[in-house]
Image (cartoon, rainbow, N blue to C red; front, top):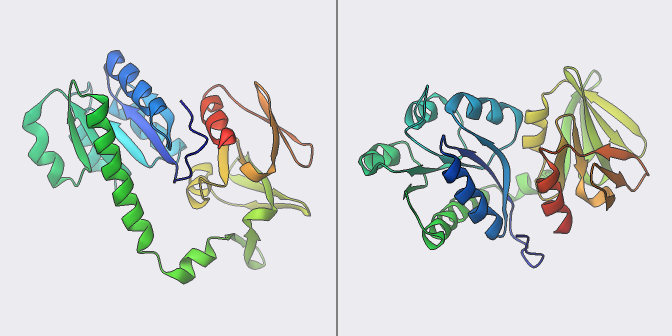
Length: 243
């Protein structure tokens, strides 16, 4: 459920749980919570790892008892994990969870009120981290810094229309042309502010400021370019476009 009056930061979420019922409950709670966007769902840790490689994720709802690799083992393999909320039916993992610096521990079945309290903890942690960024660094965030053959270059966020993946490179399209950079889509997505850009397809990121209209399977930008919207990203694009 979108909330047009919400102006806070967007939290991009991933559900990693082998229970279909858990997926349904968490998805409903996420839809009811302003500022949360469900980016992907998966049934085991291996799928979760693949999703983290593909998408910029701020928060994982992570089950512990999953097939193949359990949630705790999976979390220990991540070198720079997003914020984590454990969602489990087993209370005996709580201490180990906190040792891994998880933000909260939801014991199934949990209510929407308890879920909301956990999300508030995540917001506070993320806001605290953002507040520690020096003012000079915050000013730097008005542009994307890229490396070209000639050296480093700044591209103002306002100048970017969209970004397209081209094999091992990314094409950044602006009003004056395009720039080719050697980066993965995930790395580039993580370096862009989610309040200004949205992933519409596995191969495309667009500037929210440049979107003029949203159709079922594409967006039309201010320069009249049509960018595809895949089914995997349609809900996220709709949510972000409304805000």
